[in-house]
Length: 470
Image (cartoon, rainbow, N blue to C red; front, side):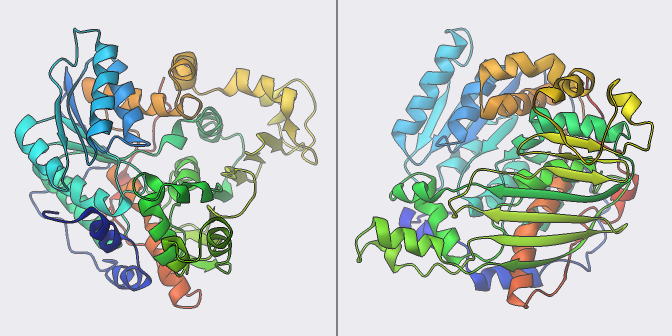
C-alpha cells in the first residue's frame, strides 16, 4: 500500500476479467483444516467493551455517515479519522465534535494525504473497532491488517472481491479472535426485518425459492471523475465480469432461509450476463470522444442473472444492474409452501386452504391476489420485528436509507457493549460476497456451475440461526 500514486492505485486495484478467473480458480474448495489455535467465529462473543473507541478509514459517501451516527450513539468515542482528502476528514471531525457537544469525541486524530496513512493510524491510536469505507479492492487488506492489530473490523459491501481474499479474512478473524463484519445495512430495513420474523414463525411454510437483486441506475456517478465513488467504481464496471454487487438483495433472503446457519447452506451457482451496451452508450452521449470514459472498453454485461442452488435444493435468483434506466428494486422475495412475501412494492400472499389465514387477519385469504397497500397495515401491526418496534422511530429520525443504517450501527455498538454475537458473522459476509467472483467465473466458462467454498469448514451445521432480537 506504500508509495502508490492514487490514479495508479485505482487502476491496479480495479477488477479485471483475468483477475476474477484466477481468483475463482483459487476458491479453496479443498480447504485445509482450521489451525488448532483458531476459533470458529459463527457464534463468537467478544469480551464486552464499555466505551467503544472507534476509528474510520474513508469518510466519503458512506464513511461520513458511519462516523456521524456512531458518534451519536451512547458508549462510543470517535478517536481517529482517515481519508485521502483533508477536507473530508475535517468535515467528519466537525460533525463528530458537534454531536459530542464538547464532552465526547474531544481528541480526534486526523490522518490524510497518502495511501498508507490508515496503517499509521492503527499503530498510533489503538482503536477497539474500525469502519472501512473505501474502494472495494482495499476492503480485504485493510480488514486483515486491522484484525492483526487487535481491532474489530467493520467493512462496507462487498467484504472482498476475490475468494482468496475472503479466505484470508476468515483465517485472520479465526486466528486473532476479532470480528470482521460486512455491514449489510439492508438486513435492517423494516420489511426485511418483518419478513424475517414472519419466516421464523412459519407463516409461509417450508422455503422453496427466493429472489434478490440490486437494480439501481448509477450512471450519474460517472460524473465523479477525480474523486468519489464513480472515480474508481467506473473501472469495475468496465473491467469486471458478473454480479459485482450482490449482497444488498442476497443478505436478507439468505437470513430468511438460515443459509450458513444450521438449516441449509450455499452449494453452487450458474450465471449469465446481458450484452454490455449501456455504459458505452451513456459515455458517448455525455462526454467528448477523447474523454477517459470513452477510452474504456466496457466488458461487463449491463444486467447479470445468477441462479443459486442450496444444499437442500432450494433456489435463489440474484440479479444486478447498475446501468439500465429502470426503477430501483431489490426484489426481496421469499416463497414457501404456504405463501410468498415480496417487495417492490411490498406485498404478501397466503394459501387460502390452510389455517394461516387465521394467523394473519379475520378476513378470508385468497392466494390469487396480493395483500398490499393499505391492507398491509394489519400485517405490520402483528408482525413488525421487535427490533424495529424498539428502534424504528429513532432510526427514522436519525436517517440513513430510511433508518436502516442507524439500526445497523446501533446494533453493532449494542452487541459489542453487551457481549452479544453480531447479527452478521464473517462467514455470511463471505458467502454473500462470493457471488461476485463465482458469477464471473461461471460466465468465463459459458455458464458452467461454480461450487461455493464452505467458508465455515462444515461448522454451519451447528451454527445457531439468527435470533429474533427484541
